[in-house]
Amino acid sequence: MAEQKHRILMVSDFFYPNFGGVENHIYYLSQCLLKLGHKVVVMTHAYGNRSGVRYMTGGLKVYYVPWRPFLMQNTLPTFYGTLPIIRTILIRERISLVHGHQAFSTLCHEALMHARTMGYKVVFTDHSLYGFADVGSIHMNKVLQFTLADVSQAICVSHTSKENTVLRSGLPPEKVFVIPNAVDTAMFKPAPERPSSNEIVIVVISRLVYRKGADLLVEVIPEVCHLHSNIRFIVGGDGPKRVRLEEMREKHSLQDRVEMLGAVPHARVRSVLASGHIFLNSSLTEAFCIAILEAASCGLLTVSTRVGGVPEVLPDDMIVLAEPDPSDMVRAIMKAVSILPRIDPQVMHDRMKKLYNWHDVAKRTEIVYNRALKCSNQNLIERVSRYLSCGAWAGKLFCLVMIIDFLLWRLLQLLQPAGDIEEVPAFILPHQHQESEVLEDFKEEQCLG
Image (tube, rainbow, N blue to C red; front, side):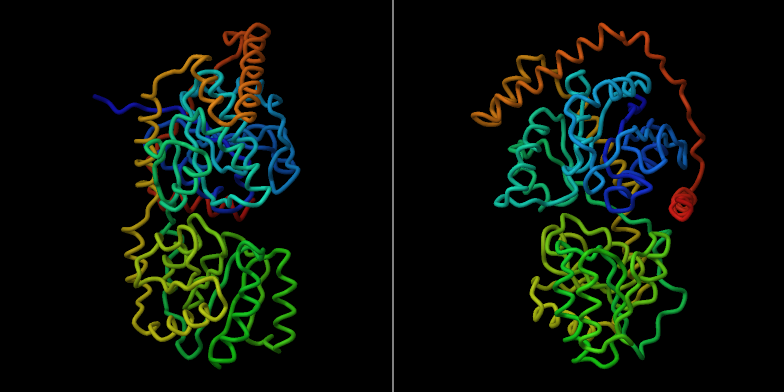
């Protein structure tokens, strides 16, 4: 029996030309699904003058809908404003399944709601961890509960992330699957010649914000430099906390030992990593840190805070973990320096090839899609009962939002019947390229941006 081929719509506010873990995940997953014979279309908001329909490597079609971001690359929540364009895309592309990414994305939440209203199966991937106590997390968790109350299947990037998502959303654990991120080992590989051991270079590449532990770096770097005279730091990244790092460098006269690179284009990340011996991650919360995978693939020993899903990422002999405390992080760095002579970058790279690859992620995601499409269809009454269980007042509000969405969808069917929307012809490229060629193209696209 031939394998079932899907027509998938990936939806998120976060996509190329923006760079980050979610953006890379969607791109690489889409490319590998295309190579497996599925049709994949991406929907995101417009970025600058990048609006309309664009094609990327491998025939990946991207709809940059004319919505502008208003905060942290998120579009303004409209509830129903996106319904007409999402309906048109679903019909035009003959989509069979909608896959939303990231709980922060308002476009993702709206697309999943509209898709369920129209009877499509939906899958959601959560890429982050959230708290339970602060006002922002409480509201976000309620929105997530609304979205996931009617989702077919969900995916998390680590077991810690799964526990967090299940607790926040009330989703049955059997509907949540753990599929980790991966790394492009063809792009991230060690330098041909190992960096000199006369000087130990510690690399930091991250956004310089509170959540990424930039305040920890301010305390850790001077202490490490004081304890070890042959350690030098390279800090790549930008953000509001960069000023504190610059002040620290001036205060302790470390201009010759702490190099501030500013924002590093993704195409240059590998060359920066390959120049170092140790990668330092100081995040205060992390569902799954792709930066650690990229560093390990380049042959760097990793020192990281023991938070979120980080302990699940690498084997114990490839990472030194520390509590998010300056003194413990200094201890971990000293331990990493002592075991550095036993590290072989090429051996580490070869291990990463076996541990993580995007084709494995795509095949596992394909299994989740198959399960989602086997889920039974719910009528309006069954969907209402699901939303009512979301809370005394929130459940009733969710029901009202969903019923209005259902009525607007019916109105659209009257004003513009599905038969009046032209379906696009199939556009399939022969996928005979090797993985390295496909991923190399992405690297070029990022450079050309």
